[in-house]
Amino acid sequence: MVRPTLSTDSSAPSSISADVLVVGVRPGADGAPATIAQPATTPFSALDDLDLAAIGATGAKDQLVRIPAVGVDAASIALIGLGTGTDAAAYRSAAGSAVRQLPHAASIALALPTDTDALVEAALEGAALGAYAFTRHKGAGTTGPARGDQRVTVLAPSAATDAAVRPAILADAASLVRDLVNTAAGDLGPQDVADVATGLASDLPLTVEVLDEQALEEQGFGGILGVGRGSARPPRLVVVRYAPESATKHLALVGKGITFDSGGLSLKPAASMLGMKTDMTGAATVLAATVAAARLGLDVRVTAWLALAENMPSGTATRPGDVLTLKNGKTVEVTNTDAEGRLVLGDGMAAASLEQPDAIVDVATLTGAQVVALGDRTTGLMGSDDLVAKLRAVAEGVSEPIWPMPLPEELDARLASDVADMVNATVGNPAGGMLLAGKFLERFVGEGIPWAHLDIAGPSEHKGGGYGWLGKGATGVMVRTLIALAEDLQSE
Image (cartoon, rainbow, N blue to C red; front, top):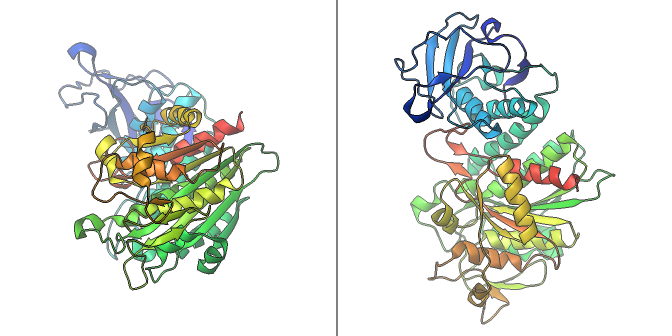
């Protein structure tokens, strides 16, 4: 991953040296003209005579207008629309949008109304998130942004040498997810993800345990084995532990890690198979959140369970009608091999429950029904009432849209099987697909353990034009929410 060098500076906007000085523009109220938003450091008069309407600067979110330098030491000026918001979310978005749209600027100074520590931190975080670029698969001769060489400075009333530490760690966590998810599936099988986890732990207070196919068989992980048996690349369960001695709370994170999902013998259509390298986003997310917890030195125990398999068709693949025994002894009749994520998650959640954590949160690109219900930007949330409420609060705090969904009791009847404890899907009946998956997962949570399920099928990947700090590709959604949840637990 690459990230710009982040810093703060209390200099006057007119005297800061940078390739681009970014100044905020706020839309006028009730049809009035847009206005320059005064930076947080010193009064700024260099643009007092600028006719914003004449150059089309409206202050709308994500609008960036470049103009020549006037009365400043910077080489050029960029006007970024702030929209009507004045909170951390607005400045995170504006800073990220500006940096995202200035990929070739070697140095950027953000002169925004960031007059509190919280707003400065939000701008730094947004800038780091907006600078993301994925170049691993670019060929020789391809030109692109040299993001790692960029310097981004946020102007603040008082400069602090450590102001950028936490924003950088949060952005790095999101970038780790985006890097893993954007990588072609041919280059990232289950063992490759395990190797990444092991490498990340080498310089941090983390331990990593990797269960190969033999260990999975011996320990009863029938769901992960059943999903992965059709692939030439065998499945893995990776357990990443962060366990500070003084911690009194334990958060377990379980991630769906299907490194490629063909649908198995219930083969997906060709168009639906494209992009299925992203089906391991849940595993990448829980890994990144745990790494960030260690880097931040949080006083909470965090354990990530990465349930990794490649779902492929072959002569050894699980067949529709086969019965699998999962980690907690429950048997599942596989009616659809393309409903595989809940099988690997069931194993991971059952194993996590054995440790009696204070909360279990699973993360998965689980159902197309989530996209139908909530669209491409809002995560589906289900589970225990208190934990659901807590996750809603922390997600709102980091500006990640989320919405609670029910777990209706009547759906239990649809999971009934004639030959096993349950089926994994109801073929031919798509009603309430996101909720049915949640009801399935609920059966693998240990009694009395608070649990929440995050279905990120839509929000995990952005396919349209850029907005805020996001460009196309993997988003890293929910990793900042999970970090915020861990921070919240340590304070209890």
